[in-house]
Image 1 (cartoon, rainbow, N blue to C red):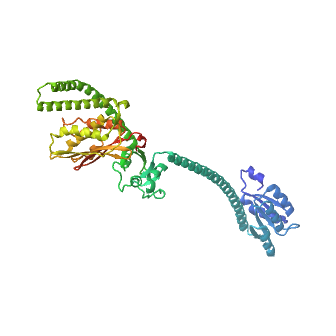
Image 2 (tube, rainbow, N blue to C red; image 1 turned 180 degrees about the vertical axis):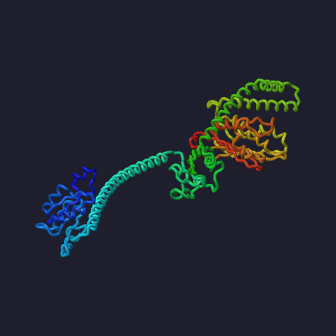
Image 3 (cartoon, rainbow, N blue to C red; image 1 turned 60 degrees about the horizontal axis):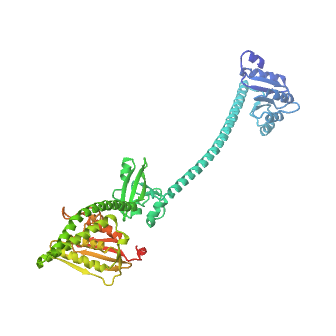
Length: 527
Protein backbone atom coordinates (compact mmCIF):
# COMPACT_ATOMS: atom_id res chain seq x y z
CA UNK A 1 0.00 0.00 0.00
CA UNK A 2 1.48 3.39 -0.99
CA UNK A 3 2.21 5.76 1.86
CA UNK A 4 -0.37 8.33 0.72
CA UNK A 5 -3.14 5.72 0.60
CA UNK A 6 -2.20 4.33 3.99
CA UNK A 7 -2.38 7.76 5.57
CA UNK A 8 -5.68 8.51 3.79
CA UNK A 9 -7.24 5.34 5.21
CA UNK A 10 -5.91 6.11 8.71
CA UNK A 11 -3.37 3.28 8.68
CA UNK A 12 0.01 4.11 10.13
CA UNK A 13 2.84 2.16 8.44
CA UNK A 14 4.72 -0.12 10.80
CA UNK A 15 8.05 0.36 9.04
CA UNK A 16 9.88 1.35 5.87
CA UNK A 17 11.05 -1.33 3.44
CA UNK A 18 13.24 -0.95 0.34
CA UNK A 19 13.15 -3.68 -2.40
CA UNK A 20 15.96 -3.77 -4.99
CA UNK A 21 15.85 -6.25 -7.87
CA UNK A 22 16.44 -5.97 -11.60
CA UNK A 23 13.43 -8.21 -12.42
CA UNK A 24 10.09 -6.41 -12.30
CA UNK A 25 7.98 -9.52 -11.67
CA UNK A 26 10.04 -10.37 -8.56
CA UNK A 27 9.50 -6.86 -7.17
CA UNK A 28 5.77 -7.15 -7.79
CA UNK A 29 5.62 -10.63 -6.26
CA UNK A 30 7.43 -9.60 -3.10
CA UNK A 31 5.38 -6.38 -2.84
CA UNK A 32 2.15 -8.39 -3.14
CA UNK A 33 3.25 -10.86 -0.42
CA UNK A 34 4.36 -8.12 1.98
CA UNK A 35 1.33 -5.92 1.50
CA UNK A 36 -0.43 -7.64 4.40
CA UNK A 37 2.26 -6.33 6.81
CA UNK A 38 1.18 -2.69 6.50
CA UNK A 39 4.73 -1.64 5.74
CA UNK A 40 5.72 1.37 3.63
CA UNK A 41 7.46 -0.19 0.60
CA UNK A 42 9.73 1.44 -1.98
CA UNK A 43 11.28 -0.39 -4.94
CA UNK A 44 14.36 0.06 -7.11
CA UNK A 45 15.41 -1.79 -10.27
CA UNK A 46 19.16 -1.67 -9.64
CA UNK A 47 21.76 -0.72 -7.03
CA UNK A 48 22.25 2.86 -8.27
CA UNK A 49 18.54 3.59 -8.06
CA UNK A 50 18.50 1.84 -4.69
CA UNK A 51 21.23 4.16 -3.33
CA UNK A 52 19.22 7.21 -4.43
CA UNK A 53 16.13 5.82 -2.70
CA UNK A 54 18.25 5.11 0.36
CA UNK A 55 19.09 8.82 0.71
CA UNK A 56 15.50 10.08 0.50
CA UNK A 57 13.73 7.14 2.10
CA UNK A 58 16.02 5.93 4.95
CA UNK A 59 14.55 2.40 5.14
CA UNK A 60 14.62 0.20 8.20
CA UNK A 61 14.82 -3.03 6.19
CA UNK A 62 16.50 -3.51 2.77
CA UNK A 63 15.90 -6.56 0.54
CA UNK A 64 18.36 -6.87 -2.37
CA UNK A 65 18.93 -9.45 -5.05
CA UNK A 66 22.43 -10.81 -5.33
CA UNK A 67 22.78 -10.75 -9.11
CA UNK A 68 22.13 -7.32 -10.59
CA UNK A 69 23.66 -5.40 -13.52
CA UNK A 70 26.46 -3.10 -12.52
CA UNK A 71 26.83 -3.21 -8.75
CA UNK A 72 25.89 -6.64 -7.30
CA UNK A 73 23.93 -7.19 -4.12
CA UNK A 74 26.99 -7.63 -1.84
CA UNK A 75 28.48 -4.29 -2.83
CA UNK A 76 25.10 -2.58 -2.60
CA UNK A 77 24.37 -3.91 0.92
CA UNK A 78 27.86 -2.91 1.94
CA UNK A 79 27.03 0.65 0.88
CA UNK A 80 23.74 0.39 2.78
CA UNK A 81 25.60 -0.69 5.90
CA UNK A 82 27.94 2.31 5.59
CA UNK A 83 25.11 4.83 5.08
CA UNK A 84 22.40 3.40 7.37
CA UNK A 85 24.21 1.10 9.83
CA UNK A 86 21.06 0.11 11.71
CA UNK A 87 19.10 -0.93 8.60
CA UNK A 88 18.54 -4.70 8.53
CA UNK A 89 19.80 -6.26 5.30
CA UNK A 90 18.20 -9.28 3.58
CA UNK A 91 19.62 -10.88 0.41
CA UNK A 92 17.80 -12.86 -2.29
CA UNK A 93 20.01 -15.63 -3.66
CA UNK A 94 19.80 -18.49 -6.09
CA UNK A 95 20.89 -22.07 -5.48
CA UNK A 96 24.30 -21.49 -7.08
CA UNK A 97 25.27 -18.50 -4.94
CA UNK A 98 26.90 -20.23 -1.92
CA UNK A 99 30.19 -18.43 -2.47
CA UNK A 100 28.29 -15.16 -2.67
CA UNK A 101 26.59 -15.98 0.59
CA UNK A 102 29.94 -16.41 2.37
CA UNK A 103 31.23 -13.17 0.88
CA UNK A 104 28.07 -11.32 1.93
CA UNK A 105 28.40 -12.63 5.47
CA UNK A 106 31.98 -11.39 5.68
CA UNK A 107 31.44 -7.99 4.01
CA UNK A 108 27.89 -6.89 4.69
CA UNK A 109 26.80 -8.70 7.83
CA UNK A 110 23.52 -9.87 6.27
CA UNK A 111 20.58 -10.33 8.65
CA UNK A 112 18.89 -13.13 6.67
CA UNK A 113 19.06 -14.93 3.28
CA UNK A 114 15.99 -15.78 1.24
CA UNK A 115 16.43 -18.41 -1.45
CA UNK A 116 14.63 -18.28 -4.75
CA UNK A 117 11.96 -19.43 -5.11
CA UNK A 118 10.78 -18.35 -1.65
CA UNK A 119 8.02 -19.43 0.63
CA UNK A 120 5.58 -16.58 1.18
CA UNK A 121 5.08 -17.27 4.88
CA UNK A 122 8.79 -17.59 5.39
CA UNK A 123 9.32 -14.30 3.53
CA UNK A 124 6.77 -12.44 5.71
CA UNK A 125 8.19 -13.96 8.87
CA UNK A 126 11.75 -12.99 7.85
CA UNK A 127 10.79 -9.40 7.09
CA UNK A 128 8.80 -9.16 10.30
CA UNK A 129 11.84 -10.46 12.26
CA UNK A 130 14.03 -7.88 10.50
CA UNK A 131 11.75 -5.03 11.58
CA UNK A 132 11.68 -6.43 15.13
CA UNK A 133 15.48 -6.66 15.08
CA UNK A 134 15.64 -3.04 13.89
CA UNK A 135 13.29 -1.94 16.68
CA UNK A 136 15.26 -3.98 19.21
CA UNK A 137 18.54 -2.51 18.02
CA UNK A 138 17.06 0.99 18.12
CA UNK A 139 15.81 0.38 21.65
CA UNK A 140 19.19 -1.02 22.64
CA UNK A 141 20.88 2.05 21.21
CA UNK A 142 18.39 4.27 23.03
CA UNK A 143 18.99 2.38 26.25
CA UNK A 144 22.72 2.59 25.63
CA UNK A 145 22.46 6.34 25.15
CA UNK A 146 20.32 6.65 28.26
CA UNK A 147 22.76 4.45 30.16
CA UNK A 148 25.70 6.48 28.93
CA UNK A 149 23.94 9.70 29.88
CA UNK A 150 23.10 8.30 33.30
CA UNK A 151 26.65 7.04 33.73
CA UNK A 152 27.97 10.43 32.76
CA UNK A 153 25.55 12.08 35.19
CA UNK A 154 26.60 9.61 37.89
CA UNK A 155 30.26 10.36 37.20
CA UNK A 156 29.50 14.06 37.44
CA UNK A 157 27.51 13.56 40.65
CA UNK A 158 30.22 11.31 42.07
CA UNK A 159 32.88 13.87 41.28
CA UNK A 160 30.73 16.60 42.86
CA UNK A 161 30.04 14.37 45.87
CA UNK A 162 33.72 13.55 46.26
CA UNK A 163 34.49 17.27 46.14
CA UNK A 164 31.85 17.98 48.77
CA UNK A 165 33.03 15.08 50.95
CA UNK A 166 36.63 16.26 50.67
CA UNK A 167 35.56 19.82 51.57
CA UNK A 168 33.38 18.61 54.45
CA UNK A 169 36.18 16.35 55.68
CA UNK A 170 38.58 19.27 55.57
CA UNK A 171 36.10 21.48 57.45
CA UNK A 172 35.47 18.76 60.04
CA UNK A 173 39.19 18.20 60.49
CA UNK A 174 39.72 21.93 60.83
CA UNK A 175 36.82 22.21 63.33
CA UNK A 176 38.16 19.22 65.29
CA UNK A 177 41.61 20.79 65.38
CA UNK A 178 40.16 24.12 66.52
CA UNK A 179 38.23 22.40 69.32
CA UNK A 180 41.31 20.47 70.39
CA UNK A 181 43.37 23.68 70.45
CA UNK A 182 40.57 25.42 72.37
CA UNK A 183 40.46 22.69 75.01
CA UNK A 184 44.24 22.46 75.23
CA UNK A 185 44.51 26.22 75.72
CA UNK A 186 42.36 25.97 78.88
CA UNK A 187 44.32 25.82 82.11
CA UNK A 188 41.43 23.91 83.74
CA UNK A 189 41.86 20.11 83.50
CA UNK A 190 39.07 18.67 81.34
CA UNK A 191 38.32 15.08 80.36
CA UNK A 192 35.60 12.89 78.84
CA UNK A 193 35.01 10.04 81.32
CA UNK A 194 33.05 6.85 80.71
CA UNK A 195 30.62 5.21 83.10
CA UNK A 196 33.39 2.90 84.36
CA UNK A 197 35.61 5.98 85.08
CA UNK A 198 37.83 5.23 82.09
CA UNK A 199 39.23 8.40 80.51
CA UNK A 200 38.42 8.60 76.80
CA UNK A 201 39.81 12.04 75.97
CA UNK A 202 41.55 14.78 77.94
CA UNK A 203 43.09 18.19 77.36
CA UNK A 204 46.69 19.16 77.98
CA UNK A 205 46.02 20.56 81.47
CA UNK A 206 44.58 17.18 82.48
CA UNK A 207 47.60 15.25 81.20
CA UNK A 208 49.92 17.68 83.03
CA UNK A 209 47.98 17.08 86.25
CA UNK A 210 48.10 13.32 85.69
CA UNK A 211 51.87 13.54 85.13
CA UNK A 212 53.84 10.30 85.07
CA UNK A 213 50.76 8.24 85.93
CA UNK A 214 49.51 8.70 82.35
CA UNK A 215 50.89 5.79 80.32
CA UNK A 216 51.04 6.44 76.57
CA UNK A 217 48.01 8.03 74.88
CA UNK A 218 44.34 7.77 75.74
CA UNK A 219 42.49 5.27 73.52
CA UNK A 220 38.98 5.75 72.13
CA UNK A 221 37.43 2.70 73.76
CA UNK A 222 38.34 0.20 76.43
CA UNK A 223 40.89 2.43 78.13
CA UNK A 224 42.10 0.96 81.40
CA UNK A 225 43.42 4.36 82.53
CA UNK A 226 40.92 5.37 85.18
CA UNK A 227 40.31 8.95 86.27
CA UNK A 228 40.79 8.38 90.00
CA UNK A 229 44.01 6.49 89.31
CA UNK A 230 45.41 9.09 86.91
CA UNK A 231 44.71 12.19 89.00
CA UNK A 232 44.79 10.99 92.59
CA UNK A 233 46.56 7.62 92.45
CA UNK A 234 43.54 5.91 93.98
CA UNK A 235 42.52 2.31 93.32
CA UNK A 236 38.84 3.09 93.96
CA UNK A 237 36.61 6.01 92.85
CA UNK A 238 36.91 9.18 94.90
CA UNK A 239 34.33 9.63 97.68
CA UNK A 240 31.62 12.04 96.55
CA UNK A 241 32.49 11.72 92.83
CA UNK A 242 29.63 13.36 90.83
CA UNK A 243 29.95 11.10 87.76
CA UNK A 244 27.33 8.45 88.78
CA UNK A 245 24.77 11.09 89.80
CA UNK A 246 25.29 13.04 86.56
CA UNK A 247 24.70 9.90 84.48
CA UNK A 248 21.64 8.95 86.53
CA UNK A 249 19.94 12.37 86.52
CA UNK A 250 21.10 13.59 83.13
CA UNK A 251 22.02 16.94 84.65
CA UNK A 252 25.27 18.66 85.56
CA UNK A 253 26.49 17.88 89.09
CA UNK A 254 29.15 19.67 91.13
CA UNK A 255 31.17 18.34 94.05
CA UNK A 256 34.40 18.89 95.94
CA UNK A 257 37.08 16.22 95.88
CA UNK A 258 39.85 16.35 98.49
CA UNK A 259 42.88 14.21 97.70
CA UNK A 260 46.58 14.35 98.47
CA UNK A 261 46.21 17.52 100.52
CA UNK A 262 44.49 19.45 97.74
CA UNK A 263 40.84 20.31 97.17
CA UNK A 264 39.28 20.30 93.70
CA UNK A 265 35.94 21.73 92.60
CA UNK A 266 34.75 19.04 90.18
CA UNK A 267 31.83 19.38 87.76
CA UNK A 268 30.34 16.55 85.68
CA UNK A 269 28.18 17.28 82.62
CA UNK A 270 26.52 14.21 80.99
CA UNK A 271 26.58 13.61 77.24
CA UNK A 272 22.97 12.62 76.55
CA UNK A 273 22.62 9.00 75.48
CA UNK A 274 26.37 8.42 75.33
CA UNK A 275 27.05 6.98 78.80
CA UNK A 276 29.87 9.49 79.22
CA UNK A 277 30.39 12.77 81.06
CA UNK A 278 32.59 15.81 80.58
CA UNK A 279 34.48 16.42 83.82
CA UNK A 280 36.31 19.57 84.87
CA UNK A 281 38.68 19.88 87.81
CA UNK A 282 39.59 23.20 89.39
CA UNK A 283 42.12 23.38 92.20
CA UNK A 284 40.55 25.57 94.90
CA UNK A 285 43.01 24.76 97.69
CA UNK A 286 44.60 28.22 97.62
CA UNK A 287 41.20 29.88 97.40
CA UNK A 288 39.99 27.96 100.41
CA UNK A 289 43.11 28.91 102.36
CA UNK A 290 42.67 32.57 101.43
CA UNK A 291 38.99 32.39 102.39
CA UNK A 292 39.87 30.77 105.68
CA UNK A 293 42.41 33.46 106.43
CA UNK A 294 39.99 36.19 105.44
CA UNK A 295 37.32 34.77 107.75
CA UNK A 296 39.90 34.42 110.49
CA UNK A 297 41.01 38.02 109.97
CA UNK A 298 37.42 39.24 110.12
CA UNK A 299 36.82 37.27 113.29
CA UNK A 300 40.00 38.62 114.84
CA UNK A 301 38.97 42.16 113.92
CA UNK A 302 35.60 41.62 115.60
CA UNK A 303 37.26 40.13 118.66
CA UNK A 304 39.69 43.05 118.73
CA UNK A 305 36.84 45.51 118.88
CA UNK A 306 35.22 43.49 121.65
CA UNK A 307 38.52 43.19 123.52
CA UNK A 308 39.09 46.94 123.34
CA UNK A 309 35.69 47.65 124.85
CA UNK A 310 36.11 45.05 127.59
CA UNK A 311 39.61 46.30 128.46
CA UNK A 312 38.42 49.86 128.93
CA UNK A 313 35.63 48.67 131.24
CA UNK A 314 38.02 46.54 133.34
CA UNK A 315 40.67 49.24 133.67
CA UNK A 316 38.64 51.37 136.12
CA UNK A 317 37.93 48.74 138.85
CA UNK A 318 41.39 47.27 138.30
CA UNK A 319 42.99 50.66 138.98
CA UNK A 320 41.03 50.93 142.22
CA UNK A 321 42.14 47.46 143.40
CA UNK A 322 45.79 48.27 142.67
CA UNK A 323 45.56 51.70 144.39
CA UNK A 324 43.94 50.38 147.56
CA UNK A 325 46.42 47.48 147.79
CA UNK A 326 49.37 49.88 147.57
CA UNK A 327 47.78 52.21 150.18
CA UNK A 328 47.20 49.31 152.58
CA UNK A 329 50.85 48.23 152.24
CA UNK A 330 51.92 51.67 153.48
CA UNK A 331 49.97 51.34 156.71
CA UNK A 332 52.20 50.66 159.67
CA UNK A 333 51.66 47.69 161.90
CA UNK A 334 50.81 45.24 159.12
CA UNK A 335 51.72 41.64 159.89
CA UNK A 336 53.96 39.62 157.63
CA UNK A 337 51.00 37.50 156.57
CA UNK A 338 49.01 40.63 155.60
CA UNK A 339 51.95 42.03 153.68
CA UNK A 340 52.34 38.77 151.77
CA UNK A 341 48.63 38.83 150.89
CA UNK A 342 48.84 42.47 149.79
CA UNK A 343 51.90 41.66 147.67
CA UNK A 344 49.94 38.88 145.98
CA UNK A 345 47.01 41.25 145.43
CA UNK A 346 49.29 43.89 143.93
CA UNK A 347 51.10 41.32 141.81
CA UNK A 348 47.82 39.88 140.54
CA UNK A 349 46.44 43.36 139.86
CA UNK A 350 49.57 44.28 137.92
CA UNK A 351 49.24 41.04 135.99
CA UNK A 352 45.63 41.86 135.19
CA UNK A 353 46.76 45.32 134.14
CA UNK A 354 49.25 43.79 131.72
CA UNK A 355 46.54 41.50 130.39
CA UNK A 356 44.27 44.47 129.83
CA UNK A 357 47.07 46.30 128.09
CA UNK A 358 47.59 43.24 125.92
CA UNK A 359 43.92 43.28 125.04
CA UNK A 360 44.15 46.94 124.08
CA UNK A 361 47.24 46.31 121.98
CA UNK A 362 45.54 43.31 120.43
CA UNK A 363 42.59 45.43 119.42
CA UNK A 364 44.67 48.06 117.64
CA UNK A 365 47.86 46.21 116.58
CA UNK A 366 51.04 47.14 118.34
CA UNK A 367 53.00 50.00 116.85
CA UNK A 368 56.61 49.72 115.82
CA UNK A 369 57.63 52.64 118.03
CA UNK A 370 56.26 50.76 121.08
CA UNK A 371 58.66 47.87 120.59
CA UNK A 372 62.24 47.35 121.74
CA UNK A 373 64.98 44.75 121.84
CA UNK A 374 64.69 42.10 124.53
CA UNK A 375 66.04 38.76 125.67
CA UNK A 376 63.73 35.80 124.99
CA UNK A 377 65.11 33.90 128.01
CA UNK A 378 64.30 36.83 130.35
CA UNK A 379 60.77 36.93 128.94
CA UNK A 380 60.41 33.19 129.58
CA UNK A 381 61.76 33.50 133.14
CA UNK A 382 59.28 36.28 133.95
CA UNK A 383 56.42 34.23 132.54
CA UNK A 384 57.48 31.18 134.59
CA UNK A 385 57.54 33.28 137.77
CA UNK A 386 54.05 34.66 137.16
CA UNK A 387 52.72 31.22 136.28
CA UNK A 388 54.40 29.65 139.30
CA UNK A 389 52.01 31.46 141.67
CA UNK A 390 49.08 29.80 139.93
CA UNK A 391 50.70 26.36 140.20
CA UNK A 392 50.48 26.50 144.01
CA UNK A 393 46.90 25.27 143.64
CA UNK A 394 48.14 22.27 141.57
CA UNK A 395 50.70 20.38 143.68
CA UNK A 396 50.75 17.42 141.27
CA UNK A 397 51.85 19.56 138.35
CA UNK A 398 55.53 20.28 137.72
CA UNK A 399 56.87 23.14 135.58
CA UNK A 400 60.24 22.62 133.88
CA UNK A 401 62.18 25.52 132.40
CA UNK A 402 64.72 24.68 129.66
CA UNK A 403 66.47 27.77 128.36
CA UNK A 404 69.15 27.78 125.69
CA UNK A 405 71.92 30.22 126.77
CA UNK A 406 73.26 33.14 124.72
CA UNK A 407 70.30 33.56 122.41
CA UNK A 408 70.44 36.65 120.16
CA UNK A 409 68.27 39.61 121.05
CA UNK A 410 64.85 39.89 119.47
CA UNK A 411 62.85 42.96 118.57
CA UNK A 412 59.25 43.26 119.72
CA UNK A 413 57.01 43.62 122.72
CA UNK A 414 58.19 41.27 125.50
CA UNK A 415 55.00 41.87 127.49
CA UNK A 416 52.86 40.59 124.61
CA UNK A 417 55.07 37.55 124.03
CA UNK A 418 55.01 36.84 127.75
CA UNK A 419 51.24 36.89 127.51
CA UNK A 420 51.46 34.28 124.74
CA UNK A 421 53.66 32.06 126.94
CA UNK A 422 51.27 32.40 129.89
CA UNK A 423 48.32 31.57 127.65
CA UNK A 424 50.00 28.44 126.30
CA UNK A 425 51.00 27.37 129.81
CA UNK A 426 47.42 27.93 130.98
CA UNK A 427 46.05 25.80 128.15
CA UNK A 428 48.59 23.08 128.86
CA UNK A 429 47.59 23.10 132.54
CA UNK A 430 43.92 22.59 131.61
CA UNK A 431 44.89 19.69 129.34
CA UNK A 432 46.63 17.75 132.15
CA UNK A 433 44.69 14.99 133.91
CA UNK A 434 43.67 15.25 137.55
CA UNK A 435 46.55 12.94 138.44
CA UNK A 436 48.98 15.70 137.43
CA UNK A 437 51.69 15.95 134.82
CA UNK A 438 54.60 17.99 133.52
CA UNK A 439 54.61 21.37 131.75
CA UNK A 440 57.78 22.38 129.94
CA UNK A 441 58.74 25.85 128.74
CA UNK A 442 61.86 25.85 126.60
CA UNK A 443 63.66 28.28 124.29
CA UNK A 444 66.11 27.79 121.46
CA UNK A 445 67.42 28.90 118.07
CA UNK A 446 66.55 27.41 114.67
CA UNK A 447 68.47 29.02 111.79
CA UNK A 448 67.54 32.68 111.54
CA UNK A 449 64.73 32.31 114.09
CA UNK A 450 64.44 31.95 117.85
CA UNK A 451 61.62 29.97 119.34
CA UNK A 452 59.88 29.19 122.56
CA UNK A 453 57.91 26.01 123.08
CA UNK A 454 55.32 24.85 125.61
CA UNK A 455 54.96 21.09 126.02
CA UNK A 456 52.35 19.30 128.10
CA UNK A 457 51.77 15.64 128.91
CA UNK A 458 48.01 16.00 128.72
CA UNK A 459 45.26 14.45 126.64
CA UNK A 460 46.18 16.01 123.30
CA UNK A 461 43.82 17.65 120.77
CA UNK A 462 41.39 15.79 118.55
CA UNK A 463 42.55 16.00 114.91
CA UNK A 464 39.20 17.43 113.78
CA UNK A 465 39.68 20.44 116.11
CA UNK A 466 43.31 21.27 115.26
CA UNK A 467 42.37 23.48 112.28
CA UNK A 468 39.99 25.54 114.48
CA UNK A 469 41.93 26.13 117.69
CA UNK A 470 42.96 29.65 116.62
CA UNK A 471 39.42 30.69 115.74
CA UNK A 472 37.94 33.32 118.07
CA UNK A 473 35.35 31.99 120.51
CA UNK A 474 36.21 28.37 119.70
CA UNK A 475 36.87 26.22 122.77
CA UNK A 476 36.47 22.59 123.80
CA UNK A 477 36.42 23.47 127.51
CA UNK A 478 33.20 23.19 129.53
CA UNK A 479 31.09 26.34 129.93
CA UNK A 480 32.61 28.77 132.41
CA UNK A 481 36.16 27.45 131.98
CA UNK A 482 37.16 29.16 128.76
CA UNK A 483 36.18 31.93 126.37
CA UNK A 484 38.01 30.73 123.28
CA UNK A 485 39.91 34.04 123.01
CA UNK A 486 43.29 32.97 124.43
CA UNK A 487 44.80 31.27 121.39
CA UNK A 488 43.14 33.74 119.03
CA UNK A 489 44.85 36.63 120.83
CA UNK A 490 48.12 34.71 120.94
CA UNK A 491 47.88 34.05 117.19
CA UNK A 492 47.39 37.76 116.50
CA UNK A 493 50.36 38.73 118.70
CA UNK A 494 52.68 36.21 117.04
CA UNK A 495 51.50 37.28 113.58
CA UNK A 496 52.18 40.94 114.43
CA UNK A 497 55.76 39.98 115.36
CA UNK A 498 56.28 38.26 111.99
CA UNK A 499 56.31 34.87 113.67
CA UNK A 500 54.51 31.61 113.04
CA UNK A 501 52.78 28.97 115.13
CA UNK A 502 53.42 25.26 114.86
CA UNK A 503 51.23 22.72 116.65
CA UNK A 504 52.10 19.06 117.21
CA UNK A 505 49.60 16.95 119.09
CA UNK A 506 48.70 13.29 119.59
CA UNK A 507 45.66 12.05 121.41
CA UNK A 508 46.63 10.62 124.78
CA UNK A 509 50.25 11.79 124.49
CA UNK A 510 50.03 15.56 124.87
CA UNK A 511 50.63 18.65 122.75
CA UNK A 512 53.54 20.87 121.76
CA UNK A 513 53.04 24.52 120.75
CA UNK A 514 56.08 26.16 119.17
CA UNK A 515 56.33 29.87 118.34
CA UNK A 516 59.07 31.02 115.94
CA UNK A 517 60.13 34.68 116.08
CA UNK A 518 62.50 36.03 113.40
CA UNK A 519 65.84 37.45 114.43
CA UNK A 520 66.11 41.15 113.41
CA UNK A 521 67.57 41.96 109.94
CA UNK A 522 66.88 38.40 108.79
CA UNK A 523 63.19 38.65 108.07
CA UNK A 524 63.76 38.34 104.37
CA UNK A 525 65.15 34.83 104.83
CA UNK A 526 62.05 33.47 106.50
CA UNK A 527 60.43 30.55 104.66
